[in-house]
Amino acid sequence: MNIFSRIFNTVFDPREKEIRKAIRELHALNDRELDDLGLSRYGIEAAVRNGHPDTDNTRRAA
Image (cartoon, rainbow, N blue to C red; front, side, top):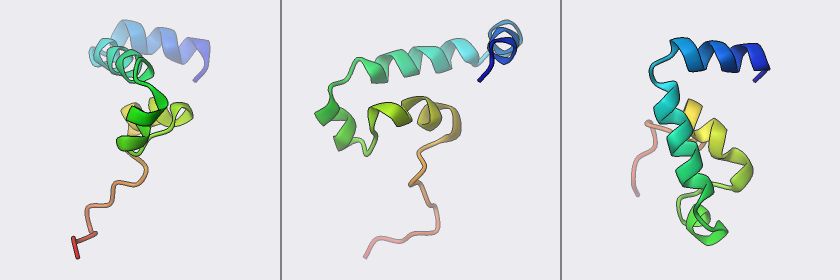
């Protein structure tokens, strides 16, 4: 995300504050806790902004 997008989102997107808070909270977890959630440290921002990459609503429990 470039600096202009970040400034625009911070000023005009009311969800941005909540998104940044969620990212900070996830970064505060240790690697084991992130692994339990199915996340890695480098994928936190993408998961918060776009949803978890492994989320597939078409899968059914066996």
